[in-house]
Length: 238
Image (cartoon, rainbow, N blue to C red; front, side, top):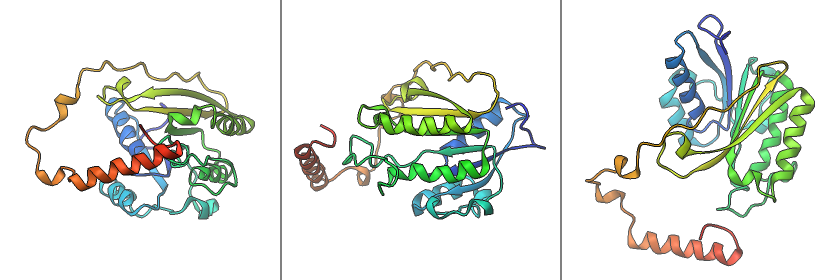
């Protein structure tokens, strides 16, 4: 990405933005590579709390939210070089009903296929997808491969890896699927080497925590009952 600088910043669109963790990562790149720069040309988010968080972190992009990705007219969106699309995991996650992500299914995870409109309209150089590990399970792998093959048909080469948060220096066992897709000729992409885990949970927990953050007995009973209901249906965590 050496060609992207303050005079020619990497133009980004963040679909399913959340609080924009991708923007935070790009800011870290700016610290490591001072000549690098990026700019948000658009975002897509409908959750009011996520929008509030992203606006607080990136106030300069507060007016660039195009809302519901299924209703965006991509001809009205500026061109961009980088497109991130961490689409909803709701219907893939082991914690849910696993209704799937098939095109036309009407599920929230099925919103992945709305990204075709953005990609075909703008053909950005770089794509970044992130989702739960279950995306590569036997149940959902065929749909994932279908999506990857679609990108290949457009000229993208995709690189996929399951990365655990523990490999990024974070004391949390959290596995996620990442896929980087690059359009046209390019140097082969390599995921970063794991970072040594030096922190433990005890290093970040506070000793004195306000009682308002404790779960009530009623809430705990409710969570246990909720999990029992899911176990009976064969879903959820045990």
